[in-house]
Image (tube, rainbow, N blue to C red):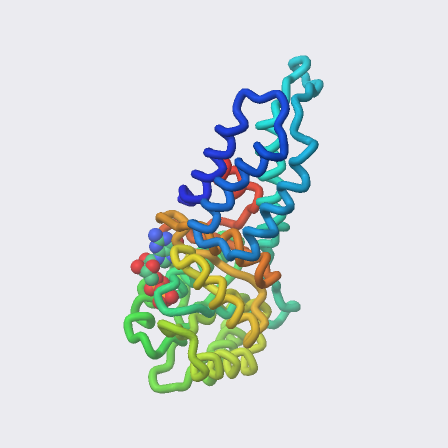
Length: 304
Ligand code: GDP
């Protein structure tokens, strides 16, 4: 995963190897490799530009060999180590800070998590994963099959609900906004404490979809609106995210398919472009493959 991005940092690291001091020219040469790999990984152009400028500013003048005191005695810190540490910190800053919290309503009222996103992004699967996580956290969730345009989505959610022992609410022929309101009322009656709404997606954003999502939001006032985005589609995921955010004021993202050959563009750009946090990562198809997002962890994976 994220091999494309890692490649550039590896090349940069090699250029700095064995040096006791590095000049601005060497820093620029190393940053060229990083810039190319970030663009190849589909990180947005502005984000790349800002990232490279920040690393450059910190790296130039600072990258000389030093010694630090550790428990094991004096440890040599090479310019290469300094440079990689700067990259690590800036990658972390780009994606952070950590915010994996979900908002919960006051007692007596079920909390809502509205899942939105394009078709195929992994919304239905992720709704199941989130229900699994909430169960483990001691909550009593219900799932709502409000993706009525993709008939398989309802059955898919029912299968996931059955596996987890989580009720799946669906009313054939009822409009999604009304269905979501009825689901909320049912959750209140049954003393469920989290309602996860699996809403419809489209292959591309259209106004009809957005209006429906706005209506659902107005009906159930969810505490959390999470956009599920496919990390494989890079910058397109970021553009989609920005549009959904503009219409719905989302709370954060779940990036899926990070286990695959994701180029990483979405993971690195989405926070900086939208200002909203990545909360979870989808790391596989099965129900337990949902990870809380740790910018520090992803930065370390990228730098190897
Ligand atoms: P929806 O149209 O947004 O509801 O998307 P689905 O939940 O049906 O997911 C589309 C496909 O992506 C399915 O084949 C899922 O198994 C797969 N998928 C979802 N999340 C992940 C993930 O994190 N990793 C991988 N490898 N596949 C995923």
